[in-house]
Image (cartoon, rainbow, N blue to C red; front, side, top):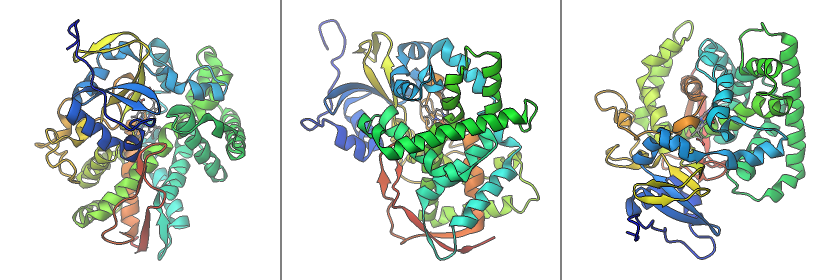
Amino acid sequence: MTVDGEVRTPMVRGLPLVGNALRMSRDPARFFVDCYREHGPVFRVRVLGREHAVIAGPEAAEWMGTKEGRESLRSREFWRGLVDEYGATRTLSGEDGPSHKELRDIMRRGYSREAIADRLDEVVAITDRNLDRAWRPGSAVPVLRSMQALVTDQLGELMSGASRPEYVPDIRLVTMYILNVLVTRQHPRLLLHDPRYRRAKRRVAELSRAMIDDRARAGADARPALLIDDLLRANRDNPRAMPDSDLMISVTGPYVAGLDTVANTISAFLYAVLKHPDVLARVRAEADELFARPTLTERDLRGIPAIRGALMETLRLYPIAVVQMRTATRDFTFHGHRIAEGETLYIGTTVPHFLEEFYPDPYRFDIDRYEKPRAEHLAPGAFSPYGRGQHVCLGKTLAEVQMLVTMARIFHRLDLSLESPGYELARKATPTPGPALSFRVRVDGHRA
Ligand code: HEM
């Protein structure tokens, strides 16, 4: 205790100069769990000379959604780099309070379950054309690259009505630079001068102009109604809320939010299922039954507990957003520890994913945890793959449907195996944690 009754916040031991950066980048999820075990829900870390406060565990996850949590945190600083680089005034992820609510209201429908619910056959068709192109029998497929191409294709169609595959490498490159340099700042700003990035940025600007022009020509009554339509309507009817300068980052927002997240998650899903033959058999049986129906409806997705359980386990064990980064808007006390206005905070919402108290034998891939009566994820603060609080993933139900359909289709159509049965997943930490680019699977044949 300090003199005024506050608790002295422990500092995690680290190396000279780099501090905790190495351990944190090697396995961020484990790093924060180990620190939580040793120090409790509040501690400090040092990363390359900068000190940050961490609040973690179920208590932090719950607190983010409270009024006090919402009022004590802001996101602006982390997204400012992106907003400035693209000459915009604001972006959904970087706003808080009423300004955030205004943008979220404009975008809610376009990012919702509705945006995908009636389009499952399209998602299947896009998946098929990607599998037919790049997943040939006898080949060893680089999983993450293939999933990035597939997800870019799907998101383009779903959110703007066109996929334009010739732009996939540019979208992927720009998204990676945005996440690495401008948002998480794991790489230096100098990299923004890289001619490959400058070129890709120009091409993505060209693409978003073409998407906007095409959709504007299609008219306000074009069906199905898409996110881009709502953005264009807001731009026309309420240009203060959606000025021309903000259209580009809003139109390409689904890529920044959805490309890396979904591609990483479904790549990890593929690994985890192939690693567990008992799970593979159950997933295949459900997938075959699902596609034996003449058409696929959202309702059918409720009857696939093994595939859903495998997705939940993947989101739990391979979270792409281990922590959320925020700035303290004011001085506040959390569990007796003082956090000062202006401090950078990491909020370890996924720490409970690895705690025995919530998930017995927590590192075991057990797809039956989620069905009642176990329902281990329903304990307060236990499960937060999509974040918490006011910025909780706006696309989470859409993403869930997209991932369930895609994975079911892949296991229905393809006979896959790991390069060797003993293969252990190679992982990367940037821009977000997930399978490494070197992860490949063998296509042993086509099943359907
Ligand atoms: C595996 C899939 C996904 C995961 C795990 C995920 C996770 C997250 C997380 C953790 C956040 C909150 C970040 C923060 O608080 O700082 C977030 C925000 C967001 N996500 Fe997702 N996401 C996924 C897929 C998607 C997809 C496919 C879309 C849309 C196409 C999407 C759209 C968004 C948007 C728009 C936000 C910003 C919300 C706001 O700031 O109000 N996400 N996501």
